[in-house]
Length: 156
Length: 169
Image (tube, rainbow over all chains, first blue to last red; front, side):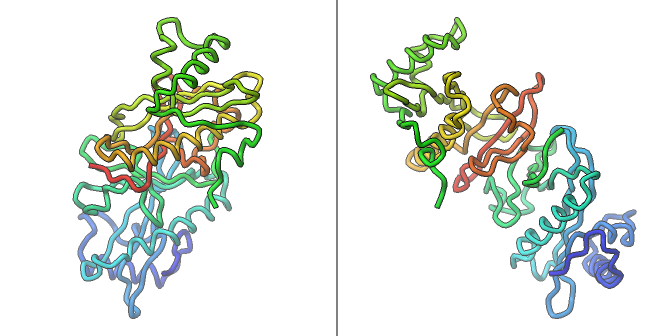
């Protein structure tokens, strides 16, 4: 596991771009170099990057705070492993540490939108292990909304 | 070891009431509500007493009650026990309400496991600022596992505490 959040690490960014190009998961129009700036952490196996977690920071209207909107991508050859689970803890810690270091950013926690069927039976767990992302609602197009607040954060 | 209600508020005696139809506790709770005059006029104390989850006694009389009504919360597509809390004003700085929440959570989580057909997924609460005693700005309460999950149109907080072993539909 290698943390990448706001580190501008050229090696991890290059590996991530190669990974996205290799598995072809980025939607058309998304600039891989720009997405690489959103990296939180990357998982490597045998020297090859096999999964990434990325985030952008957005205002979440229904909670009235700024949160890191999480995305994940895993090499299809490793989807049955628990790579994203393993990324969860270092990703959380990296974002939390950054939020503590930059209180002016008022980053309250993390939020993930989970498409139906994407995680199978895992979506039946109201609280996910490792990431501790908890169900807080559903979008109109049936995606689960999961959130995790940072322990230190206080509302205005 | 997990913190218990008794650890948190050792000067009080906590008693379960959920679905026990205990006439003594119900009578004491009605007396408590009448003494404090806190129930809305349209609410019959005897009916509210049927919703008791747990109570706190001190010196032989009830000083705190928790009640719950089971219902589906559309926002999370799950059946939750929506909690209400009332504490004698003389005891408001004693953490008894917080301790009762801990007690009720353990009680209802156990009941949910024993009655899987009830599909009870966790606890919910709609909280006014006066009920939060300075803790309303903490979006996560680790001891009771309540998270802030949104706001009502009138600004009250919606909080949820999932039972972790529950599985959603």
